[in-house]
Length: 149
Image (cartoon, rainbow, N blue to C red; front, side, top):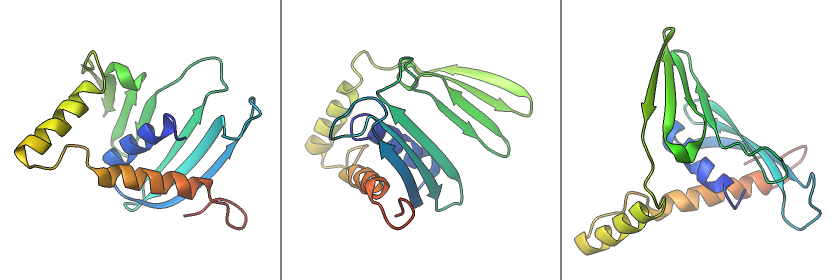
């Protein structure tokens, strides 16, 4: 979760809003070590939307996709860091391509430097990182019959 799952939680929060409840399972399915190699976390967002995040470093076939299903249609991103998405609504499909920067981190660093120079908040503020960390800790916490926030 802490390696790459945290970035996917940020995507979910950016798209779906604040989280009301977290439930999760973390464990070691392949590698016997102190940190998990697999995690599944369920989210109930304040707007009653639900989401599921599954991350694992113990699978042979890599997968970094996003699928959102709603009452009006769906959004599908086959590989998050490649920038291609499909939008389906009313039986019609539209494809969009948003090629990523050659260095995925450079735009973030440039925005942060610009925010310091111009006295404005950065696009990705520290509050988001703190919220993501809080959600991960909630997924790790065992209370009663499961993980709850």
